[in-house]
Length: 176
Image (cartoon, rainbow, N blue to C red; front, side, top):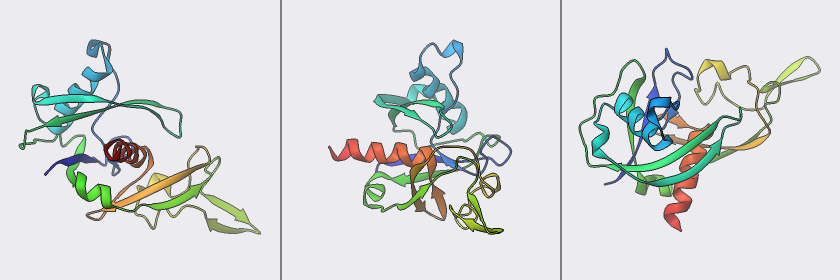
């Protein structure tokens, strides 16, 4: 069965402990964003980029912190992965068919200054980052913009943020 390959980021890297899709920053020697994807998949997943066939570009996504992400969809028949443990705690294989049936939790957040709002000296949790077991860096807030956030849960992990937005767009394209 076809699966979406997700990775749980190693604790010692930026956004450690979060679930994300393979990928990373463009380097000049990549020449194209497509080559960046192939290089990053090889580095992170431990599979040869020659075993990956790019199907197409899903689109350009902008994160809450205004980072631009070019998203590509690819396929591999490779079943032997050797993830880079410096970057990847574990791989998660989410069956596409199962994802298409999943319902998300919806949260409306405004994180201009904090996920906590002071009301008469009391703190009110606006977004339950701690209860969702998200990395500790999100427990006290971060800067971003007002938006709708979709959260998926799979095998005890929380898929959220730009990753959930990308997966939602992928599901829309498949259903079309």
